[in-house]
Length: 430
Image (cartoon, rainbow, N blue to C red; front, side, top):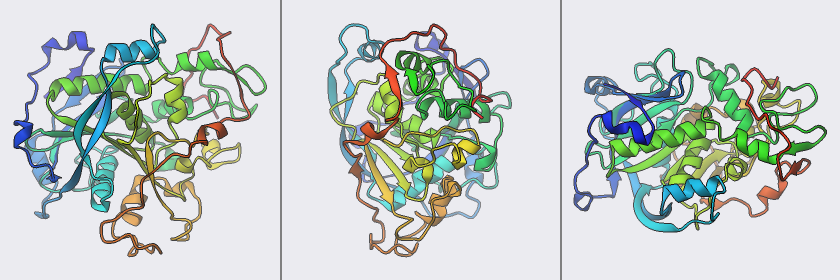
């Protein structure tokens, strides 16, 4: 089955929603999942779901591997009382503050290495078609679900949807950037690069005078039009807007399910932004700092973002926010990755201090995290700190003064003097 997802007011033609059993009958200590769907963005900007047949899920574990389980925890999240009020606040219509309601949900246990390992494999698989030979087998308890964005002509937002057999919990895994310097490229590389340069640069990917910009908000010198930037980020073709539509349709398909979000790099940042928007448990891996993008998107802030967790290591210059400057690896490849502040909390593995790694862009791919950070107990990986068999570094909030260090050399005007904020192409930059 192939479902092309539509705005909420056009969804009546979709197939009937999937219904899980009564939540009161479910034991929440561990969960098991399979892949259900692939998802993607087509050339017209619509999000498309495609079912993954059950026989393909079975083929992914030909050796009959043992059951994979995910440990869970109960948490309280803050959700906007009304999405209409939320989006009005984003557009600065009426009151800018909105009421938030606490909701008790089941979330992944981010203090468990094995849980982080399995979620990281879901993010790796978001880059691949399930029939790719490098796909990580998640075990027979995770349903192979809808992949999104995998038709040949779909060049945007991609990933997979995993679900438990009873549909009680659904995981939306979002693909990150694919580019030659990260080991690939492909049909999504152009839009990936555009989103990277808009979301994580100080001003339209203006690194120095040799760079062309991806939006028309640069005002000369170190000046940038803040209102123009904020408007540019709301274009319908950009991934955050596509993600909100995808999430809306996913909740239609699974109206009673708990939804988790995960992703790597750009996918992790998008998962975090969506998790902050809808109050859903989120685990992001090696994500660039997305707090500045959240501010520019005017995302109203709930009382707590503890349900959003970032996992990264100290040798990754993208997650650490050090891949900056005209001579950096990112800039040489045409990416202006200039942010470093994250939403929610962060679990940071000290691969530089404890494993002796050097800061290197080649440590950014999720496979490095899976195979060299999360594959076993930290001591077995070479770490000096004893975290135990299944332990991880403590989750800590972002530094309170982090935002004051981002883009500190830029002067941002409060009102727009530009009328043309059209975003450029991925060929812009360098």
